[in-house]
Amino acid sequence: MSDVARAAGVSAATVSRALRGEPGVSEATRRYVTEVAKRMRYAIARDASSLAGGRKYAVAVLTADGGRGDLLAGAEGALRAAGYDVLLYVLRDDGARAAFFEDLPALARRVDGVLALSARLADDERAALDGVAVPVVAVRDDDLRDALRLAAAHVRDLGHREVALVLAEDADESCGELLVEAGLRVRPEWTLWSSPTVAGGEQVVDVLLDGDRLPTAVVCAGGEVALGVFLRLRRDGRDVPGDVSIVSLDGTELARAVGITAVEGAWRERGEHAVGRLLAALRGESHGGESHGGESHGGEPPSVRLVVRESTGPR
Image (cartoon, rainbow, N blue to C red; front, side, top):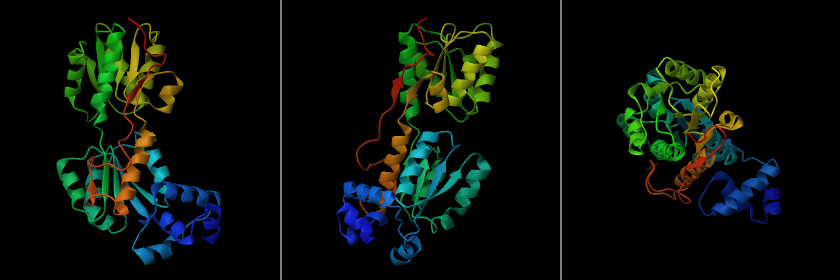
């Protein structure tokens, strides 16, 4: 620890507080000391620090399906950089959800906090998290409607009027109303639900091809689905964007690689931002033990933005 203190130009006590996430150190100093310690391959002996301060140096991270890879990667990287182990819980189905919330009281004794990443919590699940004795920070998935508005305005401005909407399996059908409000026509058979996979996107196109005609644009909830739509249309000899334009409401590396226009949410930065809020709560810098999208630490998270690529064009 003394070597890190000398290299960083601070006291050993400051190094100790910074690496243990304790109060009394500015966020800038904490980040700087953490970076110096990483370069020097220094790590706190967490077993000893846990005994001294009651910390477990573990955080439970919840996600609905693991689909937002950038969000999870940002959160995981920030937690590990701060010296915390990540206990990942994927609430993929009703059974997984029931098992997690049944074990929640015991889990809360094994972790310092809980991070819920776009987990789409029901009211009773949210109430259960409210009742645990550790800080909880939730990143809500409220940006879907903002993303839809951006996508709708984009395809409308390109001259499209007949649009298909492909939603995640648990999304609300009322999302299609936002496209109608933008002046777009969404036929009932063009509102579809898909698994968050490339195969799901391909199956969507199979359904659309069975209709009397194709929409001129397809708005997809996820990048993998958009990629599946893209690949299946190309296999059918359709030109993208000449015949059909494609917009994704979530950018992924694969979708970016083939040039799919997407609403990018700066998800990695959002994950890091959520961890910042959780660490602040652990240091006693936030009000109460729970934060579900209320007061935020370090300013607001980045907002969504449209990134235009080759998959959309004028009608």
